[in-house]
Image (cartoon, rainbow, N blue to C red; front, side, top):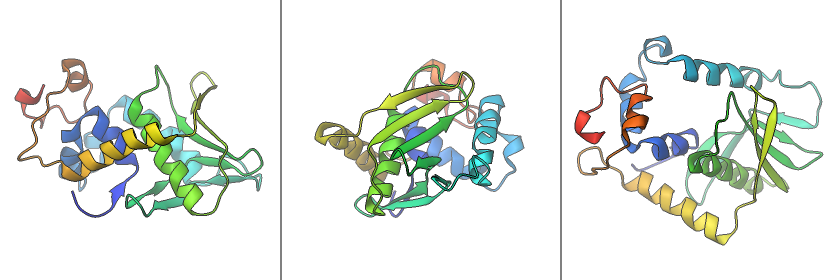
Length: 184
């Protein structure tokens, strides 16, 4: 995969590399045809961000676009608190923290830093229970892991890359009807 990588695709790739390809198949269709309840709730969690209605306080940047030139990544942050120097990724419901969620937050962090913002804290906010889960600012080891994932995304080919995914992931995948069963 050459060119720009959407930051939101990092978590998708960790869930299942093949899902990025299948997302492209569905892109021209209305989301109601393939989004299930979790995706719809996630979309609704971001609605206030996308429309700038999270808060009217000037201290919050909401839905700001970011770019990371080193990795050619582009995306949007959820919320950046300029007073607390805190980057917040909002999720509808968080059962546990996954690496893909951390890497997505790292990419947003790198984009804000590249744009000249000071970011001292990261967290993922679970809307359903109103809990915040702090994430450490990435150090050299975490950035090395992150870079390996970005490299894996860039080198992924639906025709040549074979990677099995757990049955539980396949059962919860919105693309399971299109996916080749041998991948599960």
